Length: 283
Ligand code: N1C
Image (cartoon, rainbow, N blue to C red; front, top):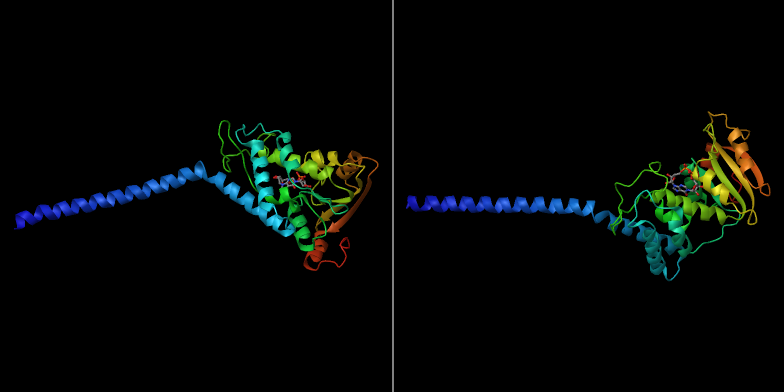
């Protein structure tokens, strides 16, 4: 009896080992598949999901009946700019169709540009709703903080392994901000504002997007002036006489009225905490 049960037990142990091995192999295979999905197709789907959901969220506030259609058009024009292209060969013009495909609004006297002050600027615009930055418009809102690129010969979108901002000038993210910043500046009307960083030696940097693209796209037949708000902290000696600000003044069309004011960051924080009754009364 025992001579028969021994092989049966051994066979059972073998079957168990095979089952365990198959389960382990299946688990390993699914982990591998997940890694491959993230590396190949996953990010594209994630990017699409983020873009579509931000786009519909933005348009929900404005409530146009055809927001799904607008967002699909936006996605198609957006991906059309860089999919299948070398990551360092996406010219600014690649985004022309995208810029023309979305509805644009006029924000006369309310346009706010910025350079090296992104955090306080967005705290201010979100807290007070007085001024409008590029990130408060559809394209800026949807793409803010995202990274994307394509690959030569591939129909996919990627969010990893993309060039950094300074790696090559014609990378998809940098060209996007260049193109939409140019359109945003060209559409400014009335008196516009720019918040610059008074803690820096050169608050106006001619190589920044603001200095190299936006200032050059101001349209003096639409705009009347530019008000510089030099955001200062208690410890620094920020002054409107800073030579970089004189360069900014020189770079502007003389038809534009230039003004400059040093405003303490604490004063701006105060307005964010307790928004002034009238917009424009913070400084
Ligand atoms: O190079 P900058 O600032 O002068 O660009 C800021 C300027 C603003 O007035 C915006 O209208 O250009 C526009 N802009 C954006 O709106 C924007 N959102 C996010 C330019 N760049 C933008 N980013 C990212 O910030 C972008 O990916 C790049 O890395 C920074 C540039 O910020 P900066 O040097 O402080």
